[in-house]
Image (cartoon, rainbow, N blue to C red):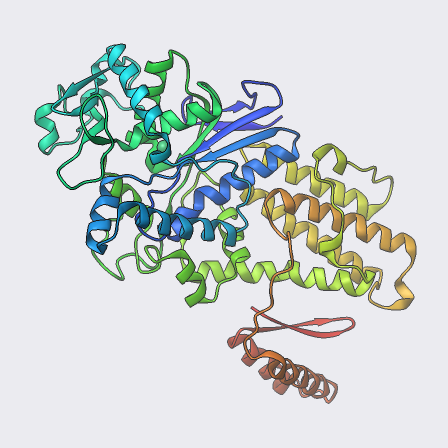
Length: 514
Ligand SMILES: [Zn+2]
């Protein structure tokens, strides 16, 4: 039984979708006015794994991520760049899509755009006015928080404690905490005709409209960063539940934010904490520091990071905890991944088959196997159970990745103990057991979107570097034979400093690039 921590009840609840066997999931997407940074990738990678896991457990999952392509920030940026807002939005949406594809986030079913749902947004706003939950004031439309007794139930805040937005709009509102559903356009701004005059939607309303349109009035999982609980998700709930008279989403899942650890303040001036009610500050607050605000694709390129390293790094922490961001930490996690890559090569040497060609079960029930009395298979089954327990417990990807390390260590030990790298140690039964273990590893890692295809080897240095490394490995072997361990160690340590790892195996020494 899967259990999910629900921000609404502040407890872990059994996961029971509204309609048996089907799951509707909505994640608040980006405002596309600048290139995505690594903080924007946290939610997509986590919820991609949540979808993979639920699918693996037999659910039919529909996942929606919205694109905010009309917004104050888009207007400002398009004016700065002297380009139409829709072109800026298209350019930055492309960037976002490239980031997702790079990280293997390819399970999102719908990317609705605010500008493509203008009619629905206007109709939804008109319904809220008709029902007495919203009012028009000077071409703007505001939600009347005083009419919504449950307001504050998600964030646990009382209306009295809320500051609300000040500024020019404050004079037109009945209360400071009321928020805009529709904003009138200033001359020269992009606008859409509406019963209240030309204008554009507020940020919160688009999520209420598009989630309801695609997933229904009550759907299963609403996700987002912890910084969106208030006001964004509180306002989504107020709008949707006032309009439909029923719960908006059953489970509210919030991921922890990325925070800079060693990089805070290097390039000063960015806020490190989200300010209430300020969308831009909420985004800026996700991470501070030099790399935090940098375009994700540039970051990968400049720091020479492999996308799988980043994916693994994002999943190595429990999704509800903050992720400490630093390049050093990503590299450290990446080094851990090499343990798997080395095993894959080993598996290929032993069996003659690629790890990536193993047909692993796509469904949980198909991955069950009878280990009998075999010690290896019993351990594999036990690791599989631990992995599934971790994932069932509120998608504890951090615990689950830890189990993958244990499993690969166990498989390596089997290869060592049974001398499978020597022809003498090989027989059909041992190879079958190894393959069962590797298939389980591939099955489980697949639910996290890991090890789906071979990682491209870095091309730098190319063939010559490879031959030089082979030569150094050979010289080091000679030195060891001659018991000149100091010189042999110097080669290993110096190579480690420039990012080459040497690993001594029964069959010889292997080098790999970090
Ligand atoms: Zn939203």
